[in-house]
Image (cartoon, rainbow, N blue to C red; front, side, top):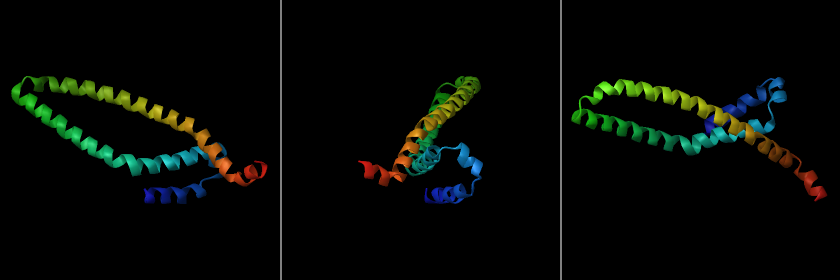
Length: 125
C-alpha cells in the first residue's frame, strides 16, 4: 500500500492543470483513501476467499463427476450460463462502485476544505 500511495503521490502533482480543473479535490482524496484501503484491508482476505472457493468448486465438480458421469455433459452449458451471468454482474458492480465513489467525493471535498480553513473556522467559532 505504501508503494501504491507513494507512486500516486508522485504522479498527481505532475498532472495537467485541466485534470485539477475538472476533478474535484474530494474525488482525488477519495481515490487515494479507497485504493490504499483496498490494498491494506481487503486484498488478502479476498484472495484467500478466492482460493478457498476455487478449491471448493473443483472438489465439488470432481465428486459429482465421479458419482454421475452424465454431469460432465452438462458442465459446458452450465459454464456458459455462469460466464454470461458473471459478465453481467461485473459490469453492474463496476457501475455501482463508480456511483458510490462519485457520491462520496463531495464529502471528502467538504472535509478537505474544512481542514484547509480550520483556522478561519476557529476564529469565528
